[in-house]
Image 1 (cartoon, rainbow, N blue to C red):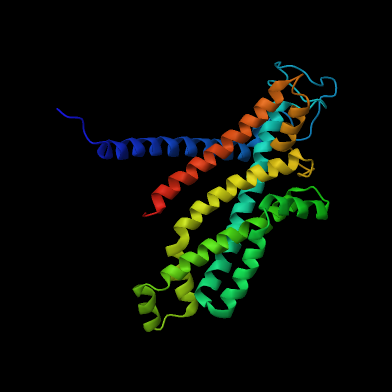
Image 2: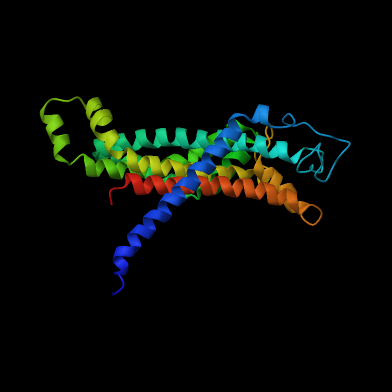
Length: 281
């Protein structure tokens, strides 16, 4: 019996791999969000607490993963860092997606001069590398807080969503059901929010997951450079300290890097699964 064609075997293998990736992504994201949610009850020590009598301590019953140079419990810092990543990441993804969707929806539907002006503004924001723009905003503000970092990241993340939504709207608004809605006397608001918006949300949801992953990495990068939130414990700050002390205690960089990497991996796998699910192509 001859072997089955590769074109028949490949889709099933791809489907199985996609389901496995989706499952891993969902598990990692749920675990990350659960840790962030219950951080005050899960962390052995309060945020910012230091054991000055045990700096650079090895793993022990009092400090399961050891301590940092200033006596901060590593396990507690990792747990509190999950909350910082959730606040900045979700805050950036939700706000920038809402702003970008509204701008793209209005621009694509209105067309004409409004679309021209809006898209030129969007292109100006897209012309600058997002991380460098966020770095500049945080540097100018000079206040390392969760709010300032989240605002800086939102200023750079909304433009991509606006362009995506505008392109989707330009395609959808030419379809027959939009023409029928106009002929039946539907208001502009109803066309925008009842007919157009639900039909462009699939790609937007996928885009939001990638904004979430990018915001987590951007916040960690800012913290690694010393421009992250000073009022909270960040994985990026732990990674920076671990890099400096790598020859003495490589475990600090290992644990913080693992937490950051697994979280971003989970979000990206979830985004890939949503793209396969929501994209009809």
